[in-house]
Figure 1 (cartoon, rainbow, N blue to C red):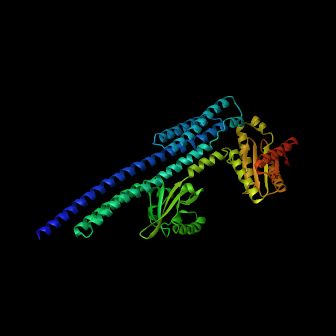
Figure 2 (cartoon, rainbow, N blue to C red; figure 1 turned 90 degrees about the vertical axis):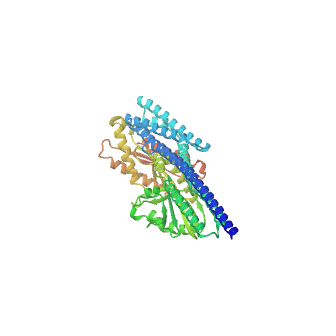
Length: 497
């Protein structure tokens, strides 16, 4: 009996020592996971803040906007605003560089920094040209900057930041699996022991759950919106960023489905896609989508987003987790690069991209394509006699006339100075000439009672080139030649080429 009692006592002591050791290991590893995860999340947040400062300083409402307005308005207020904006941009770049960057991110931010420095140098050149009273078109030609690499670099940096957020989830799974492994070995060792051992194990489970709740809090502090839904599409978990992004009130939390966060026109289609996706065990990352997605806030506002989705199974139930990023700011920056700030229609850069798409579609589907080029008659006299402000008013009014008198499928853009380009897909030359004549009459009538009265000359040409390689250049040249025939023959008329 004494030997049995001793054996039992020694067994219990060994078990208690093992449990104590296991508890210490769990405690230590959990603290390490929390500390490592907290540090990693903090770095991601700092990175997102620095990138936001760069976009705010350089993008919509920032340096580019102020730079363009300074050239167009020649107002020192916009020059000072541009200086302040580039200063904020440099501060954001410095903060980003101060982080522990990898080689790729460092190259991307340096590429963007070089473009920002070129812009700043161009601002200085613009200041000198404005002091010399150079024309707006001349200044615009001299200070053009190819910022496509900077926009790509920003997109890549935001994509890299998103991958950091994805790694937070992967990192937590690995560390929790480490803790679970320690637990499993302990459970195998102590199975069959008396209720006392079972109670200790329950206490350990309780502590693990408490640590998991702490990890959940860290998850809610992630810089992107995170939403977890079940196989029915019902939202079962959501972080603070998602609540803030979609404007979800307290009374509706726990009652929403994924489809409630989509525009009405997409809900049925998305429901079918979601059900198929859950059956496939696929993962769709932001970088692999190749396109953006539209989401709907509960206040009705539609926003563009990037989404990374993964399906998984817990407790024999399929679930999906979506990481969502609002890309409104990036799209505003891209639109600003392609939009003329005076007339709010496409600028030359945006026009060339639209033209390339129209040419590609025309060749692919064998459909006609015509081009209209419009030039305001004697526009220089308007600026000379009435001032550049009056000239700006004429350009703005004319752009509105053009947009309101073409089809939704047509593209209106400011080609440069007082020249406008209209891309008209799927109509022939005769139809394009009729449209041009309609526009000419509308312009003449709209400015008839104005001072000064305004007329316009137009050139029209249809795509006939069989070789796509030179089609764009040839079509523009023929349209431009037709326009100059209209001007040489007395102006205020339409000529086809």
